[in-house]
Amino acid sequence: MSEERFPISVTVNGEPHRLDVPARLSLADLLREGLRLTGTHLGCEHGACGACTVLVDGASARACLMLAVQADGRSITTVEGLERAGRLHPLQQALSERHGLQCGFCTPGVLMTLVELLDASPSPDEAEIRMALAGHHCRCTGYQGMVDAALSLSGGG
Amino acid sequence: MKPAAFCYHAPRSLPEALAILEQHPEARPLAGGQSLMPQLNARQVTAPHLLDLNRLDGLDGIEEAEGCLRIGAMVRQAALLRSPLLRRHLPVLVEAAVLVGHVATRNRGTLGGSLCQLDPWAELPLVATLLDAELELAAPSGTRRLAFRDFAQGPGRNALRPGELLTHARFPIPAAGTRQAFVEIADRPNDPAEAAAAVSLRLGAAGEVTSAALAVCGPFPMARRLPEGEAMLLGWRPGADPRPLVSGMPLPDAADDDRAAMVRVALRRALERAMA
Image (cartoon, rainbow over all chains, first blue to last red; front, side):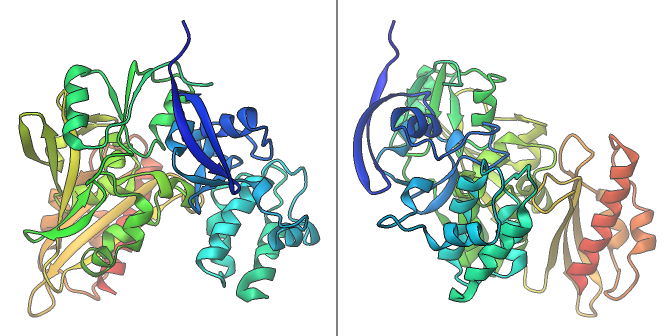
């Protein structure tokens, strides 16, 4: 017996998609397996590690805790949507320059959280940056580089 | 795919949601999904029917009503932080909401979900306990109101009857001059609280405490009020050292002594902050 599928319209990184998805498919699995956008990483799959964080209508969300069917009518931004015309997003550039990533597993989620933070308050201080990063586990423990990268862009600097 | 297969329902209106629940009383309501989705992913919970409340209209407002702030069950925790009404009338709820999860989980997680989930360390049920919040529970036959203290029955256990949905919570707006504070102790900021305390103190003309509410959570099955402690605070004056009072307050039986000690520290800090 085949599982019931639900039609959804979802915009991912500016590109509209019409898809039929089973109800229990997570947004993370839709992105990775359905759309082959494997930049969104899956770590714990219960919302603790933050690796799968994407933006849903500009607000960060754990893609492992959202159903694909719930993305109907929404606009999703993943790490693949950050670069413009082949150029890295300023935060990607800053993370690279400030050694804000080691193995890179947590980086896509970290980027989405920091993009949201800098969009909401362009001049966050170190405490605000650390509070935002508290929702991400970096097992290389590279937090200092991430904080430096975000601080380098704080205030437009 | 992680969860076991389920029938998915995404009603647009409350009557439609209640009709589905009447037909499938075993359906699990899905609010923000920040507690239920992990359980479904791990198959700790299986639900033959999932009732997704995220498309429902009318449960995401915050308004003043009858001396209360009436907050829709689907109001996101992030929206609590942004609400001018809450900041003006109920800053203690904002103080608590800042400490719930992380930015990404607050963007999805809801007030109603947290009040129904009743995690022992959860901040929002602690405030509902402190302020004697009242809940609106809707059923096809009509809506009943229930005090939060009667709703909260234990960790993960609430008094919803089959077919009922939590639609709104009413938090009393404190009288002018009331001092409130929320303090929690956690390993890292925004980790689950080891211990937390919330206080609400009303002061008389001479600055003395004329009524007090104290609520704590952490090493207990759920948030508790401290009636003996509340009585001990009557007549207390700002500036007086809270330590002797707090160390003499009877606490409910705690799961562990160290965390009971943390509860006293959280209580002392909350009293100091409220009176600062």
